Each structure stands twice: as structure tokens, then as C-alpha cells.
Length: 149
Image (cartoon, rainbow, N blue to C red):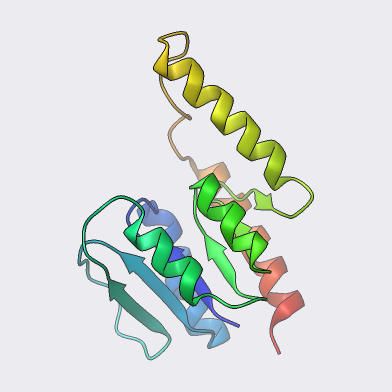
């Protein structure tokens, strides 16, 4: 099992939680992004920088992840693709996406995108707070405890 991180949009507090989790559990954290950023030195933290372009990082993740892997992303279409490959997804706010709920999240996301494009809806989610980081940490720990071999 590997943990995949959609690194371009992952908030710093969530990255920090993931760095610590990778070191503690000795599970490889693969960060995929289209830009370079520094990470703590660890044999369990790997990075792959892809070229710029629409969905390049997402496509790399979907192509390389395996059934049973965990993906951290707020990108719902990417989450849907990862779940279709047998992965599990947790968003940075700690919400677990599953085969049972991802289609509902995708439909809600598509509806909101339509409303934003017509000007009927503006803005996005509230700023990530300590409550979200704690919820993320709790769900990550539960997943890792259940799935670590």
C-alpha cells in the first residue's frame, strides 16, 4: 500500500500530518505535483514532478496507483477515478470518499460548477481550520490502523 498526495493543492497543515504519518508507519508517501517543493528528508517520502498542463498530475496518479492505495485530494473527479481503481480517498478536510458516496459528491460538485459558471454561486469552501486538520488526522489514523500490514 502507498499513500498518494495530490501535491499541488494540498494545504500545508495536511502535508505536515502526512509527512509524520509516513515516517511513523513506514508507508511510502508519493507526492505528485507540477512544481517542486521541499519535504523533510525521509526514505518514506517520495516526489514526482510532472509537466504543467491540465490534469497531468491527476493522470499520473490514476495511471500508477494500485488497488488498496490511499489518495489524499480535494479533486472530486480524481477521487472518483481513484475509487474506480480500487483506491480509498480522504480529502484534506478529513472526509472519506467511498464507492458508496463518490457519485453523490461528483454530482454536487458538477452542479456547483454549473451554478458558478452562470454567476448564481460564488466563492468556495471555507478556509481550512484546526477542526478540519484534526478530522483529517483522525480518519487517516483509522485508515492506516485498519490497512497497515
